[in-house]
Length: 410
Image (cartoon, rainbow, N blue to C red; front, side):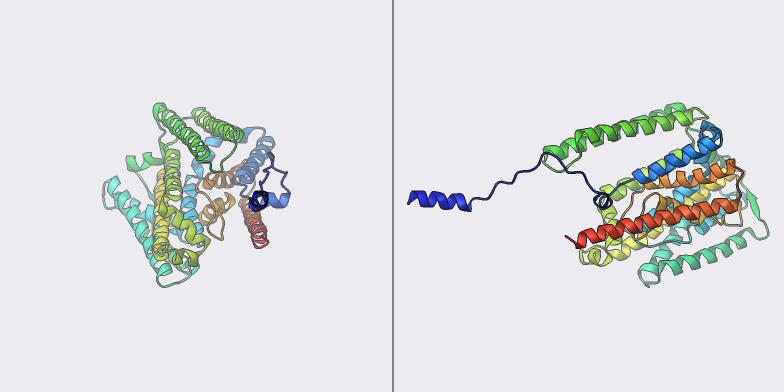
């Protein structure tokens, strides 16, 4: 009798599963079904830099040119950062360029014509930018008007208001020293080098702490070799960037502002419930609503933040140019959205990182700067940027289609 029971227990016992100690080599299709991160974009940037470095006899890769390249694209970077927030919802804001120029003009008029102190003029301009975004968000979230229509109409209207504010004056010169210093000053070495080093140490420590915590908890994590490679690459990029700027005039103040904004919104999107709700709404609006997320509030707040960032970009642009103009830069909107999309943010919502704006901004800036060094006209630059943007969107669509087929086949 006992032999029968033992035999039955042996039969009912769960079979042991042998886990292989290696992972099979993945096919191209399997690789596309995973998140490749920033690697394809980084590889593209490296190819562009090498091409222009070779064809301009090294002029493109000089510290002076690279430093100026970054400074010239700060406005695109900050506006693109706001565009990323909207794109994560699967929406689009076509008014960011107009809002940026309008807020810069309001600051200039208040400072130069009305005699407002610089900080008051800047604060008022930023508040108006936030108000503009709030109105856009209300029209989109409550009245369910497509964001394309609302922001297109806003762009046209703000362009007219811009002309009205400056009257017959096409350019208003900025004389206030504080406003001028925002984008034209450089940080002291003790701050320009010391602060990034402190932030780098904190970031590396956070990576190591997160790795140890997940491994001790038995959660899935990267291998120690991958961690070492990630730490090494981070140090190399940070050190190379600091060496580049210090080889010319130092770390520009506007660069510090851009990086600070990226870090703030990276923390918001990755470390807070609000950030997770943005991704949830962009990934599946109806599912987010059923989960109890206030979709209306998320949309309004995101469009408000987008226009606020556009206002910040306008203030820095006016500071760098020492003036505000009645005409909106015709390529500013395209460049900002292109930088976000080329950097890896999906036009379909729910996928992307704020850090991608750096790579996208550098690709757009490198193409324009390199073609300028080769004495190419605006026609060539715009055609090249258009092709790159189409390729980025096509790659995103292909990857999403492969991922969808993989999910449906499981």
